[in-house]
Image (tube, rainbow, N blue to C red):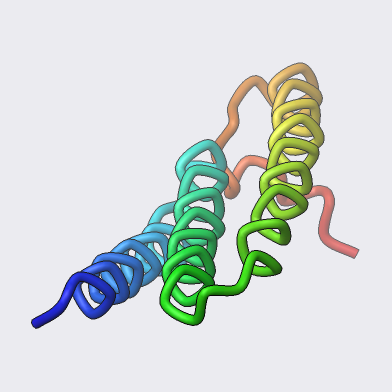
Length: 100
């Protein structure tokens, strides 16, 4: 196996772990961490493909994805603070009154 394949396998493993966290956990902080793990796996895969094809565009796009992930984290944490203030918990089951 070459290095690019190992990196892609690591990215796939990280993405699957993030997907399992998002689908199985009920704690909203863990769900946000799973989403971040999936974004980082996509970043790793994009950088590996960019390096293998000797093109810089993939590595440049990773900076935009990191910026979007940072904004998502800030917005997600502010939503969690409001959930905790209103419901006293950050569990997804406690916010049942938000259903429309």
